[in-house]
Length: 398
Image (cartoon, rainbow, N blue to C red; front, side):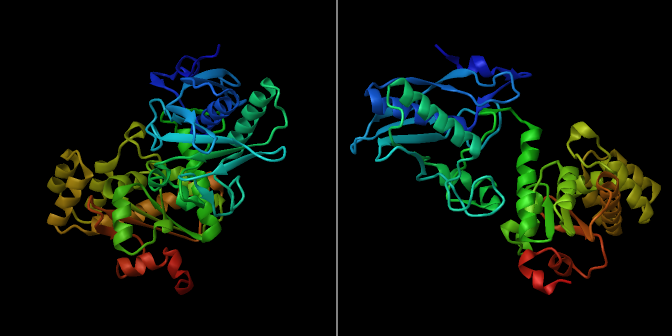
């Protein structure tokens, strides 16, 4: 008897591990096929995790079923709720269903139904036109199916398994699927079958894939940190595919862009983020350092701030409040100096990390509402600045 998945997966530090959409689909498929063969409704299902370099490699686990039953058309259906553990995952708790039915011939066929995405772009491990079931989950589902058929003396029997996710399309709208060429729903993914909670490595892997896909479409990339940059870009008429939200991984995104052949990079960031970049901090989470007010104060001094004004800035805990004070004091040139410094730091960072920079880098400082405070480069305004980085305006740019 396989152990409960929670016991096998354990924790990463104090955070509980979970299982991927691929493992969720694998469990649903195994349960549906068992039901099709035996007609016996169960409350859980046993599956085997993929081979990996993890301690849970190829371990057998038991996962509870959300639903199970014979359908009107004679097929057998089962569903499993994805459990992402303590990871903040858009797909956590979603239901993934599998319906198993006998078919003609000897093939095992996997079909993507409602809520399962379909690949439309190049550069992914699944060819365009196919359901978004990545290689490792596909392998594990087929392996699980073969095992069950063999255990019941049915090796070589043809079966069709159709996957669906009732909320798949809605949930996928909050992910990067559309940007990497997956439309209409979620992807069934996962190389180890297990979700590592708050894994920066996993985020980097996804981010690298998104930037690689973006580089295939155009030679320019806009790097936003989060909603502040997105507000600005939306207001400036950028299409959703014109930018990538990278959180705190500014340096990682810069290196990925340079390595993928991107020639022009634009970084419109909140004033708190851009000042960190200007100070040479390319992982902008607070755990990695903080030089916001010192950088802002130094640039304000270069812009003509008085000693009292500089001391006032240094006493402020938030860059947003510092920006408001600078505008009040008519020291808007500070933002230009911050952006120019950030631009220089980006070039130096790429030259050090990659051995070369890119043709064009520009930066912009934003307030919390996404309003432009200042920018690098000799541009008359935001329209002229942004023109260089809108892919839809590519033919109008030099």
